[in-house]
Image (cartoon, rainbow, N blue to C red):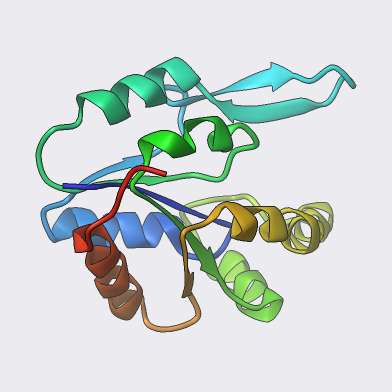
Length: 162
């Protein structure tokens, strides 16, 4: 049994991986909804889509059966890293991310020039921070089934909490 965080930039396939993991019988949670995340105003006045730490905490400490895969990329996720057995960064080159975002129909984010510029900015500035906190990294430009097999393998490997 493992709690696994799947994190990464927009377009790396976090939601697609969750979908396939669920089809394979795993418990999955996508934190990109109001049950798990909320908008907050930062001291500088900017808005940030952050985890509801109490809800995520309760999810992780009450999970007792099988593997739990949680997907998200939030500024405050590091506060809960100790409750995860693995923090897995999905990464892919900018061209791959932008192609996927342009083609996807289930998420409107990344369709405007400003959003694509933000994605490239985050790739340069945020992904290195995610990499520094990750316990593993998977090349998400490979086929989805391969990514999911690697996630399952990581979940089944012995580990201590972070």
